[in-house]
Length: 403
Image 1 (cartoon, rainbow, N blue to C red):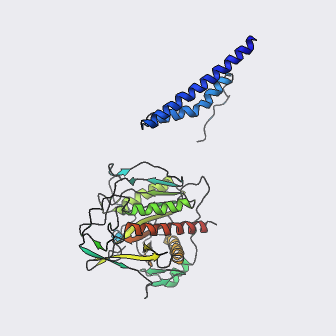
Image 2: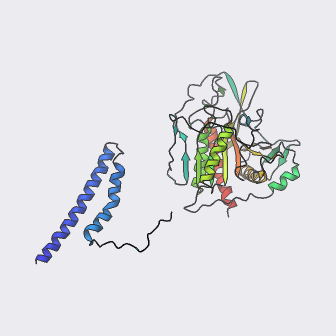
Image 3: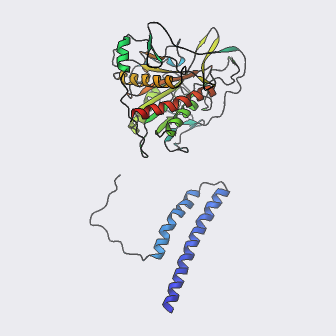
C-alpha cells in the first residue's frame, strides 16, 4: 500500500512540476507580447523547447554518463542612349575606394527572410516616400512605344532584336545566340542561392506624379525603395522565389553619397557575395534609363493585358580585344535567350537589346546582365508591372534551361 501511495505521490509531483514549468514559460511569453517587449521572449521560447527535456529528466532515472574512448567532433550605356551608361569605360582593375558603407539612418543591414524562405534580402532602405513634394509642371513627359529598328545594326532574333554596336558581324553574333546558355539553376528545398539581384545605381527612381509633366527640381533619384529601382528589383526577386528559385536581393547604395565610380564599388560587393555564395549563377543589375530631348522626357510604355507597362532593355557587354570580358559570349547567350523569351510572351515589352563594348562588371559570372526598366519619365507602378511580367518569365526561362 505504501509503495502504491509513493508511486502515486511521485506521479502527482511530476505532473505538478511539468504544469508549473508550462505555466511559468507561457506566462512570460504572454507578458512579453502584452508589453511589446522582445528582451525576454527568446528566453521564454527556449523554455518551451526545453520542457520536453525537463519532463524526461523527472520521469526517467538519471544514468551515469560514461565517456567515449575517443572524443567526438562535430562535422561542421552611352549618355545619349542611357543615363546609366556613364561609367561604361571603367577597367577591370577597380579604383581605390573607401570601404563600402551605408548611412545607418536609412539602411537596414539585417538579413531577413519574408514569407517564402527562398528570398534573402540585404541592405534594403527603410526610408519612406521622399518624392511627393515634386509636383511642379515645368516640362512635358511624352509616352512613346519603341518598336523594331532597321539598318545595319539591327539583328533579328527568333523574337525581339539586338542593336549591335560592335564590329562583330551579324552571322558571328547569331552563331553565338543560336546556342542556349549553359545555366542550370537548382530548385531543391535546401538549395543555395542561384540568382543575385542588385543595383549599381541604387537611387535611380521614377516619376512621382504620372500626370504627364515633370518637376525640374526632381533629379530622378530617391533613397526610398518604394520609389526607386530597388522596389522594382524586389518584385523580380519575389517572382523568382515564388517559382522556387532561391534569390538574393541586395539594396546596398553604390551611387550615394558619391555617384562616380559606382561600378567599382558594386564590383567589390558582387565579388564579396559570390565568394560567400559560389552557387550563384546569374547576376542581374537592375537600372532605369533616362531619355530626354529638347526639354521633353520620354517614357517608353506599352500596353500588356490592357495595362501600361514600362518598356525594358537588356544591355550586354562585348570584349573589346583587351580581354576585359573574356567570356562575353556566355552572357550574350543568356541575354538573347531572355530577350527572345520575354518578347515572345509579351510583344513590344522589350526594346532591342544593346550589345556594345561595355563592361558593367559582366566579367564576374557567365550570367551577368544589366537590365533597364523604364526611364525617369515612367511611374514606379509602370516599372513594377514590368518587373512582375519579366520576373515570372525569367524564372520560367531559367527553369526550362535546367530541365
